[in-house]
Image (cartoon, rainbow, N blue to C red; front, side, top):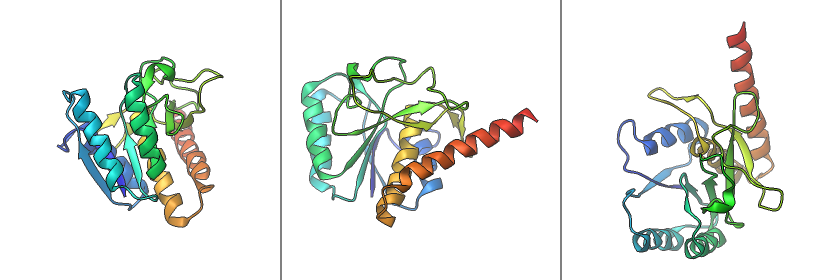
Length: 195
């Protein structure tokens, strides 16, 4: 199961876009844990605690958002990561991840965005050498049937999809293979458009 922590599922919503991306790469079930942008801190804490109670070790929690660095929230995400795989977006502010939770958390998988040339996208948050490692996945100008978008949430959704397939096949090494295949797809798109 992939638990998506995102906004209400409506046509053209962010959560709908991410679900479309996930469904393209895995048949693992997605369950939306609905969040409102106006959630108070205590309410957000309650949501993370609830998810921590229901996940299993083979589940994935996908967090496509960040908030200003918060030690208490980081602690909740660390506890969540003890119970399942947690994949989070690095953020789209062109800033270091150490300013943001849960991206800075050492216990989660933080995913940044590569552009179509295979370079770190200008919008993507990043990590300094002394910070944690970021997984880099293409995520600019991504197109589904309903929408086009760019950002680290797209890259994180792709990574979560690849990880779901790896869990099903009990072979975590294939995540990197899927990322490389995604890079090839993007590179081929560019090559074909240049002709």
